Length: 135
Image 1 (tube, rainbow, N blue to C red):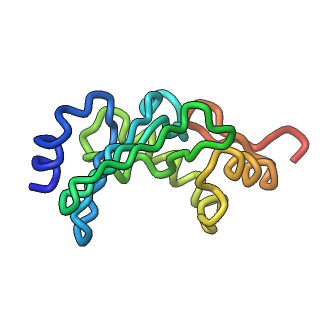
Image 2: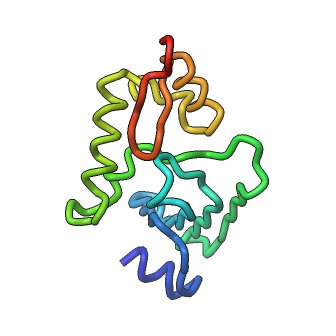
């Protein structure tokens, strides 16, 4: 119902990959990750949040951000029959097994995530976690 009201107010949100429902505040966010399927941890390009109670729109544009937010655990936002669900879930399992997702306070941005990977001697290639040579 929330999303239908938000769509009636804003129109169709083409390109939004994730719709976030803020159940208790009456807000709906549309998140745009252009490389959702192709990049393991896609960068958030833009976010539109509408408050249905106040009919207020907040827009956040990360297109030129030097350290934009990124997405982890992509499969958590998808049904199990999504074509790449298992690929995304396998990467999350690898990252969990290596302890990379244990402390989420600093990994929500591209730089924070790269720092965590570097400290662990790891990198992501495609949708696979690999140990760097000499680590």
